[in-house]
Amino acid sequence: MNELDNLAEAARAEFAQAATPADLENAKARYLGKSGRITELMKGMAALSVDEKKTRGAAINLAKQAIESALSQRRQALADAELDAQLKAEALDVSLPGRQRGAGGLHPVSLTLERIEAIFGSMGFEVAEGPEIESDWFNFTALNTPEDHPARSMHDTFYVEGGSAKAPNLLRTHTSPMQIRHAVQHVKRHRAALDAGQGMPEIRVIAPGRTYRVDSDATHSPMFHQCEGLWIGENVSFKDLKVVFTDFCRTFFESGDLVLRFRPSFFPFTEPSAEIDIQFQSGPLAGRWLEVAGSGQVHPNVVRNMGLDPERYIGFAFGMGPDRLTMLRYGVNDLRLFFDGDVRFLSQFR
Ligand code: PHE
Image (tube, rainbow, N blue to C red; front, side, top):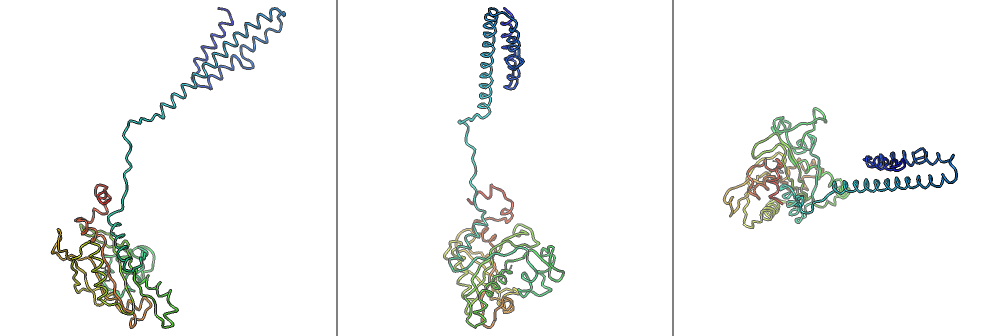
């Protein structure tokens, strides 16, 4: 084997050693680059005679071609290997079972709230929402609640930062502050007509949302839901409350023979007041009286705080517990299940 064959062989061996395209290009430069071995050999021919140049040049060219072909073979081999590795890394096994993405669903209490909104919506009630951090005024004072009422105590109410010592902020303990908030807005919109003695359209609204009390056991959660209802007009009576609420309960529970009982009670913001109990005539809960809401005729002081004349405007309010309605509707016996977030429980309501 002559010197040129050795050179081509050495190049082939070096190319084979190159593990990456960059290594290969470096190896190439050592043979075919500006100061590579082949280029050096070419330069070395300058001193030769014409005949010697012919034979020597042809021999060098053969070696150069051998090196170039070794180079392009190695380039191809490296490119193939890279593609192989990439294909392997991105391999997709189409025989594997698909990854299931579970379909979500609404929370059972959300289902109830939607149901409440739909039913009262069909009876002409608007839906209003309001803040969960309330002022003492809207939550208690405007609702005719005396300074020393036990509901105001730290044992029952979560007080939060902000507000003043005399008028602290708190997490609303019921949705009743929405009676005032909504009515005040309504009255504002119709102020001119009211001042002109023309009256205003009736207030008919429900206000669902989260409420908070210092309380926690199987049937009480520190955060729970309420839905307020308010109907104020010039001629709205307790009879209307009975009709509307009976209609609502029968529709909600899909139970046409469901019976209601209005049991005398007390709330500072209604007079007279009543607890509303329902009784199923069939099914697992048949025969038992179940409390579902507080209600009553809106107290004249509250009507006044709405910016209305209690001599002219009268109506009723009610507050119910959507969590409890959900428990009754689905036969759930522990309220905490609603707030644990256990998918095994929640997925049953899809
Ligand atoms: N806010 C009362 C409660 O939380 C319920 C209620 C609302 C009673 C409206 C009367 C009128 O218990």
